[in-house]
Image (cartoon, rainbow, N blue to C red):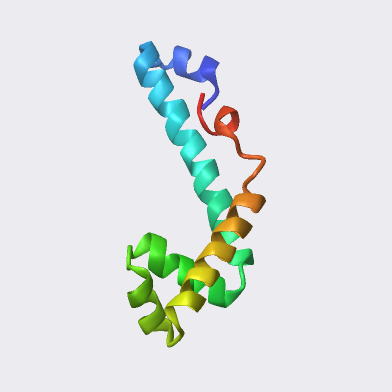
Length: 101
């Protein structure tokens, strides 16, 4: 509804204090970051994406990651490392100034 329509209907916009407004802006930026991370993850090689997911999201140790993927622990470490480096490079432009208000 356009702002003038709200006034005509007698609807008042809520008044937000600085803290509430900052929180809304923070949450909006998190949505952008979440979308960027999801896109960057989708671009990873399947082997790297699986290793990063197990290590970072599921918080498994490297031995468990290796066991789940059927690879050596050294290979699991390498896949996670390469995946995280690729993610960091893909998200390089999203610095704190673009993520937070």
